[in-house]
Structures are given as C-alpha cells and as structure tokens.
Amino acid sequence: MHGTLAALKRMSARDRGVIIQVSSALAYRSIPLQSAYCAAKHAIQGFYDSLRTELLHDDSGVSITMVHLPAINTPQFRWVKSRLPRKAQPVPPILQPEVAADAIVFAADSDRREVWLGWPTVKAIAGNRVAPWYADRYLAREGFDSQQVEEPEDPDRRHNLWEPVDDVTDFGAHGVFDDRSAPSTRQLWLVKNRPALTVGGALLAAAAATVAGLLTRNGAGEDDPDEAFEAELARLEDRHPLVR
Image 1 (spheres, one colour):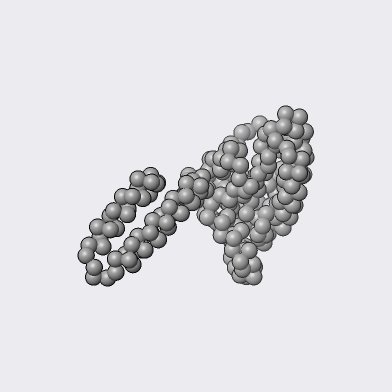
Image 2 (cartoon, one colour):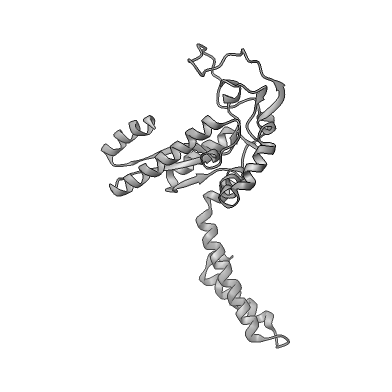
C-alpha cells in the first residue's frame, strides 16, 4: 500500500503511468496454513478496488491493475519463517517466475482491470464464486499435504521474518523446484489474444448461423446443398478475412 502511494504521488504529477499490484488467487480464495498471507492479499484487493474508483472519479491518466498469480517457483519457500513440520512448497502445478514476469509486462500495456495467470488461478477464483462450499471441503482434505514436501523442516534455520538476514548471496528469482516447474502456460496466450479470439468466435458463429440457414432453405434431398455452402463460405471469407 505504501509503495502504491509513493508511486502514485509521482505518477499523478505527470498524469500518466500504470501501477501493477502483484497479487494471487488467494486474494479471492483463502487456503489453510496461509491465513496471514491470504488476509494481506484480501486487504490489498479491497485497497485496489477503492483506489481504482478514486482514479476514475478524478479522470486520472494513471491506471491501476492487478495480476493474480498461481504457484510460482521463487526462493521464498526456503527463506521465510515456517512452523510447518515439513518443508513448504507452492501448491502444484508450479510455474517458473519468467511466466509471471511475462504476465506482469503484458498487464502494464493491456489496460485490463485484472489479469489471471494460469489455470489454477482461474479454477480457484471462478470455482470459489460458484461453489465455495466445495472449495472449503476440498482444501480441508488436500490443502495441508499439498503445501509440504516429505523432507522435515529445520525449526532453527535462518529466516527473514523478524529482521533482514545479513547475507550478500544473490538467491536469484528461482526456487528449488526447477525440475517441477513449467516454463509457459497456454492460458496466458489465451489471455493475451482474448480480443482476437472473441471477434473470431463471433464471426464463426455468424458463419455457422448463415450456413445453417442456407441448408434449411435448400432442404433435405434438394440439388447440391454443398454448392450453396461453398458459395456462402466464399462470400464470408471475402467480407471477413478472420474466417479464413
């Protein structure tokens, strides 16, 4: 929140810029063992909604968006304080951090209200809207083991909860789950190409309706309904190149 306000102070003076909140599916759907994290993400979601309406009210040239991430292979799972009996892991399936970076860069230029990254994010947010009671029971059953590996946690290992760790080591962007993390997701491609897919789907639907009407007018058993089909398809291709 303070970072957003610091950026907004400078962006407002220029009347341009994009503020991106890097969030999580857990902003909408809480899971066990993550109450503090989920509470923070829920709070930022509320802050974001309020700030967005204020910027719109002021007709500001500054925009704000939010990217909701799934499980990402970052170093946090071996660096944060944990009271779990076994070492923590992101809930599979896991994506590499480069995929998250791709979604964030896309969000900066897309003017989308929100960007959902990965099928797990879609399922968590959309599924919780439809059947939160099912998500409650599923997470109660699966949510504990899915966040831990078999290796026991060391309760005395160094962590960065109470103070920064005095270490010059650069841990980079990747965690220890490279062998289990996907370098891409088709879902992001669909998100990026949503306008074209929407137009293409509408044109195909129109073409299908036109062809169905032609076949109905020709009737079963009449001469060459296929010729009418081909002629209509050619006409549509001339008018709408996307049909090709």
